[in-house]
Every structure is written in C-alpha cells, then in structure tokens.
Image (cartoon, rainbow over all chains, first blue to last red; front, side, top):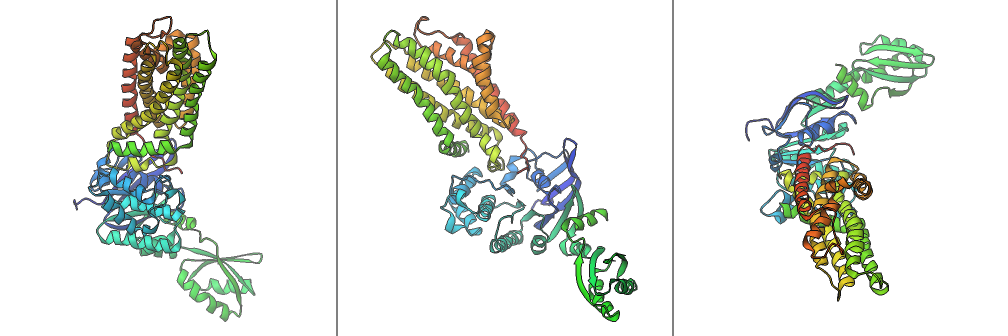
Length: 306
Length: 245
C-alpha cells in the first residue's frame, strides 16, 4: 500500500443551495469493512458520491489512496463503486453487462475477469439471462460483480443489501468480509443497525449531515444501549409500582399520568433485571412493558446530542 | 475504449422502440416519392426531389427529428436512468465518452436519413435529369446529421429536458422564426445543410438554390460541430451524478 489511508475525508461539506447535505465531516479509513450508518436522508449517499468522485465537495477534500477523487478518472482503476440506484443495462445479459465493464476498464482478459466476478456473486446460473429479467437482489449482485471485475483495492457500496433475500444477504456479507481479509477497504452505507452489527469492523454514524460517532461497532452499540431509555409500564397497580421503582438506582424518573406509567432509566441492563424483582416485592404484577424511544432515529438523535 | 462505448450505445439505440418509429417516419418520403412517380405530370422531377422531397421534407423534418430523438437518447437516456455511472466510473477521459456518443448518434441518424434520401431520390429521379442531387443531399445530410448529433448530445448533458428544448430549436427557431427573420439562417443547422447540398449539386438555380452560400455553410457547420463538441466535453467533465433516485 502507499502509506496513505485507504479513504480520507477532510473537513468535507456539501450543500445544495441553502440545504446542507454534509457538514464538515472528517475521518480516515484503513483496509477492512467500514459501515456508514445513519437514517434515511442523513447524507450517507452524498458522502459516498463524493468518495466515488461523482460529486464535488463544496469544501474540504476527499482522497482515496492519497489522491483527490474529483476529476480523476484514473483512480477508478483501483476503486469499485456500487450505487443504490437499481439501474443496469436491461438489454444485456448478466455476462455481457459485467464484460462491458471489464472492457471499459481495459482489462487484458475481460472474459476471465467477468467469469471470476460472476462466480464471486454466485450468479453463474443466471449469467446468460437479460439483466432486465433479474430480481432486485440479482441486479444488486450483478452490479457488485461489475464493481469487482477489475479487482479494486477500495470498494464503495451504497445500501448494497437492499432487495437481497436473507440467504443472498449472508452470501454478500461473506463476500465483503473476504474482500476485506484480502486487504481491501470496503465501505458500505446502511440505515439498518443489524447489517452493521454483522459486518462493520468500524462504523461511522452520520446524522443530519454530521459525523455523530465513529469507531468500533461494539463500543457504539454500547453507547446506544446505555443511553437513557423510556418505557411504558403496565401493571396491576401502577401507583404502588411507581413508588417502588423510584427507590431503585437504575430508575432516574417515573411519571404517572392518569393510569399511564412512564419510567425513565439510565441503566438499561440493570433496569430490565430489577423490574421483576421490584414488582414482586411490591406484590404487583407487570402486565406490559414497551419502549417509547427505540426507533433508530431516536438513537441517532441521542448520539448527536451527546 | 471508444469502440466499446460506441458499440454499447449502438446496441441501446437500435433496441429502442422510438428508433423503430423513426424508421417509419423515414418511410414517408419514400411513399411521397412513389406517389409523385405515379401521379404528378406537370412538375419537373428534379425540382420536386430537391425542394419538395429533400429540402422540404427530409432536411426540414426527418433529419432534425431523427437526430433529436437519437442524439438526446445516446447519453441522455443513461443520465436519466442512472446507468451513466458505468461510464463515468471508469478510468476513461470524458472526451472519449462524448466522441463515442456523438459518433453512435451520427451513425444511426445518418443510416436512417441517408437511406431515406437514396430510396426516395432513386424513385423520383431514375431515368430523369438528376443534377447529382441524390449525392449532394447524401453528403449534406451526412454533414448535417453530425452537427445535429453533437448539438443534441450536448443538450442532453446540459438539460434534463433536452428533447423539449431540441423540439423548440427545430420547430420554432429553425422552421418558424427563420420565416420572418432571414438572418436566422446563419444560426440554423438546417440552412447549413442545404448550403452544403448546394455546394455539391450541379443543379441550376431554377432547380435548387440554398439561402446560404456553400462556403459559409460548410465553414459554419464545421465550426459549430467543433464548438458544441468541446462544450459537451466540458460539461461532462464538470458533470455531477445526483444521488437522487
């Protein structure tokens, strides 16, 4: 390798008129799998497009393997890109589609490279079918084959698992892990936490155009789990249960409005362990427990506020 | 790499349903020629071929319409459906993409329009005094279709609604405005095309005469093609792929 980070984003912003899509984002990524996590509309795609050299940053610089990505077509010899949009040349067969990509890269043996890439995504049986007849998941895989055909050092994928069924999803995850093991930098975006958990060694959390958190997925997951949680508790006697819960360290607040008991905790694990014991000691039966703020967006909002 | 993009584009263009419609449009002058051959008695065949058929129908209608549909689709279709990223995400200078696209649009347009000129011209002029009109208009539409192709490929890079803007150029500017403002001929691919035909044919003025002299017509055609192509390359170099689906 060159000594440069595989991907380096320095003070990058991108705005459309008055709308800021990406706001002063800085990070560096080394080989391995890195996930770009964030809710829809957070700026993940804009960031990936800038990494791919398809969008010019309004300010800052995006470098791949030490080179600025905007206006450098030569860089595509070492970069593979899969965008979210489903578009493929519908009139071509899977084989023809990947082969055209191989030829556009100027590869010496486009046939061999095409066959290798198609086998990697497990589409050998469908390679002679027109891509226009492919399912969404197959289109996604043939796009990945086209992005891998020139054996790139850096792979950028925007929501690569969209439309893939669970088996294909696992297969693609294995493939991306394998790419990373071979020394490549694989960056993928997703708004699904579980995909990050299964795949991302490192995670960059993007919210409202800003980098909200970055680092090891497990640390970020812990951060997400340890944040204050709110629950709606239903029991046979909410008033007695509220009084009993307020005496526990895990509970930072409880409010009773009419018959509705809302409990706030700063220690998720302890609260879930203690609740049955406290209820039993107070001779109250808990009939329902539901989280009030478990959407991914609320988790992201918390991370941004920190 | 140009042949790869050229071949891919040709394949896409030929498979489009609207290209088939253009072939049907190109059949119309042939039907007109047959109609003339079997019915007209008091019009000179060369005059009809030059003014009614070639200049009036093919250069006014078939050529710009074919070039417009093909030229705006050659790259515009890929920009619209997102497949353009497979070209832009390759280690290719962008000028190659523009040249290949213009060349493919030119070939398809020229194939349709030249066949139309040759077939209808032969029907009207076989056995008649032809003044080299068929050859003249073949050369003229070859030149005109190159400029139109460059123009419409360029428009499709610059504008999302290139087809509508192109239609306005062809039918409002070239066809309508030129009727009232003679100076428009200096900014009209149609007028340049007719000027080139005038340069090649040996027909006397009573048979065919273009509004623009052959010299300026050929010069303007060349200059415009080069300028538009350079502009298209510049636009594609600065082109940003939107992430909006």
